[in-house]
Each structure stands twice: as C-alpha cells, then as structure tokens.
Image 1 (tube, helix red, strand yellow):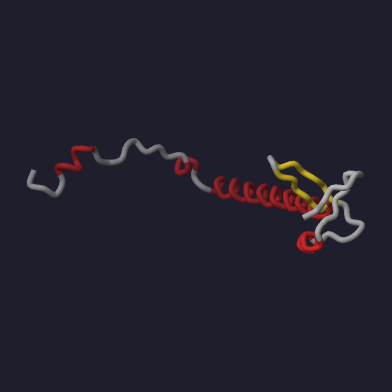
Image 2 (cartoon, rainbow, N blue to C red):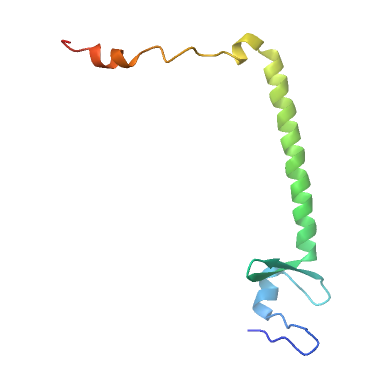
Length: 99
C-alpha cells in the first residue's frame, strides 16, 4: 500500500513497477477510470498509439483487398434478394405425413 505525502507524491510499490516495466526517471500518466486510478507508463502509451495506427493500416489494406475481390465478381451475384424461404408454414404440416 502506498501513502500520499504532503506534497501529493506517491511511492510506487516495487512489485508494481517491475510488472509494468517502470524504472527511475520514466514518466507515467494518471487516468481516472470510474472509482479507480490507472497508472500508465508513457512508453506504453506510445506503443498503444503505434498499435492503433498499425491496426487501422491493416483494416484499410483488408478493405482494399475486399473491394478488389468484389469488383471481380458479377454485381448481380453480390446483391441477390431472396423472395422468401422457398416453403410456407402449411408445407411444414403437410409434408411427409398422411395428411
């Protein structure tokens, strides 16, 4: 457990610092998350932004590939509208029985 000093400083427990990879001199961000407080190393936040950019780039690439595939298919095949199930409720009761 940590204690807040009169200067509003907090000592980070060694176990927590080791798990998060925080070393002396590193910068950390504080985020309010409902009733909790999140401690996020600034170096990790930079990695999160890079990861987000990479995911967006992969999404854009996949979208381009999908559009290319769709352009190679006959448009009439892509947007077929089915006009029913091919059977009615009555068919369920009349098939296969002595009805």
